[in-house]
Length: 570
Ligand code: DGJ
Image 1 (cartoon, rainbow, N blue to C red):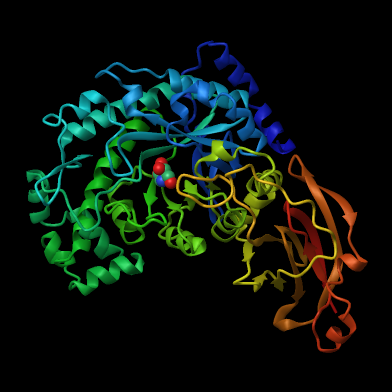
Image 2 (cartoon, rainbow, N blue to C red):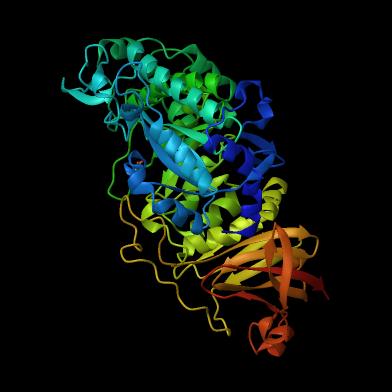
């Protein structure tokens, strides 16, 4: 585990020890609000603040059933920590928390908190309440067996499906009641130690594409005017709505009153907007009931459709971003689960409308991690199925190791907007990146230095199957570039090289290049790099005559490294 992180966690030892000994915690409600983990705008970036300091969330999500057995989890906790994670996402399920109405059992929650503390990890709990991937499989049996009291979604063919209906007060009230009890308990056991830093409310909510619930309340709502709260917001923020939503509305005539069909058109997408609004209202009520007990940041995750196709309609898909923001103000972040290609494009679609980027589920691709953190000031990154990939030698673990060390500098650069990322691969082998006074011509290049021995992922770890890996074999080269002064840069990365030019392509060369590491967030220089290590080819004289620089830096493939670069113009 990174040294800086160990030191950070030492601050948690005393309260954690108190909790482990079972000594009563101080009343967290009397603690100042600012001491609760929270999101805070720092300069240009929204960041997670834990115990007064920003935290870059380097996380992984356990498979769905893992946290239902502490015996199953036991061997994984230390491995997760050794893989340089600082946070683990673990499910807490309604069926296990409230097996009988009003009878709560938080033993698994307490076990997870205890083990996380023992291993110097934070937790984000996923509330599998009314829905998990659209379905309601995690509701308690007393809910499942009583559809009269807790009604289900009625499909267009007249068939009830096992999804709780969003239109029934009894449903959200029962869910909110359990969730509030959970948050009350977390406050009681963790209101001081702050092992738990954020909550996910439900999981990938939604219903089949283009459809809507047909129970009588849903039909009545669909034939009623679009709520004023939504239309007023659309009118007021017309120019700032996400373009695909604004265009859809405008194409239907841009009306500012009328039924859902009148305002949005007679189209399956109007069903989805309608469902998105009502899912948002429901989830908001659950989130707010929880926040009333303990106001941790709360987010939802979004099913964008995995590679096998399909998506959950009514979830906060990009076109529904504003609908969800307006319908669920109790939700602080809308987080995309990105399993699809074009990772950066999906990041960009959620790095809009003031939504901070947080990737709750994805594959364990280190290049994507750097993209999210460097180009979109992401608060964090969390590959799914992480206990299956809890190995310190994976590319993801190595990338987490470096980012954990460099986190103070990375967070500062996010706040100042002085950070960018580049990803190269066989299809995209070169890219120019402009940051501060210089432009960097990145290429995959060939290292003269022997690359460190290739890391071998455990059997079955590589590849990108559904529900699969927290890590994957390295297929890309990647870097984060941080501007630390007019002529100074920190570069973190793997498998690439770059030359650079000053403003307008003017000549520039290496003033100083050093590799190093971080201790407690402080740069510790190691080798001073010159000669072969800054000459990217031996054709430099001819290049120089053509005005091209032959000088630059290389970052060998394998575990990412850090260099400090100072440039001069001549
Ligand atoms: C997305 C879900 O949110 C997760 O709980 C899990 O089921 C993954 N899909 C599996 O790929």
